[in-house]
Image (cartoon, rainbow, N blue to C red; front, top):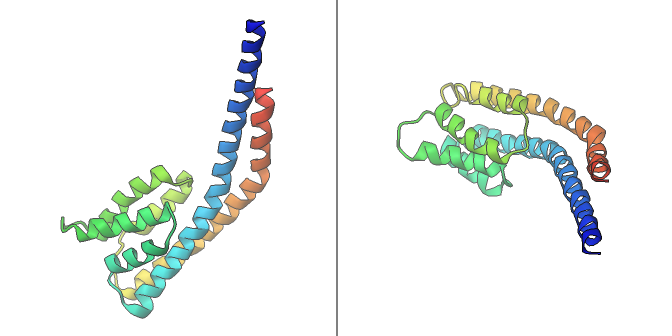
Amino acid sequence: MAAAVLKVLGACLLVFSSSFFGNLIARNLAARPEQLRKLRTSLVMLETEINYSSTPLPAALDKIAANAESPINILLRETSHRLRRGEGLTAEEAWAEALLLFRAKAALNSQDLSILRDFGVGLGQSDKKEQLKKLRLIREQLYVQENQAEMEREKNQRMWQTMGVLIGL
């Protein structure tokens, strides 16, 4: 009798855990396009701060981070924090270090992160016009990534949810 109960309990645990992992993967698929969308929105705000308010980069990043959701706010706040610490880091170096922390919390893939890494190259080293061009370019690249992520989510999210349950069964 006890062995039968343990078998049923083990089977339930197996189905539950495999369903959980399937849903976890599906949730990550849904998080990626959402994070890309929020990242683009934050970059629009950064462009506005630079273009119209002429706000210095650390202050602009702090202001935008205050309104951004996690994990986007981590990238912005950490970049600003590193620029303000007074260790002589360039904006490019501060961005790269913050990107390492952001990567651990984000649902982005290596191509998304590569675009962000490329954006950081030369950040803060050129004039306002060039920085604005760079911001527009990254927004366009992230828009393409967002569309691809949304198509991937539509195609695979339900499959992973179902596979989790079926593998458990």
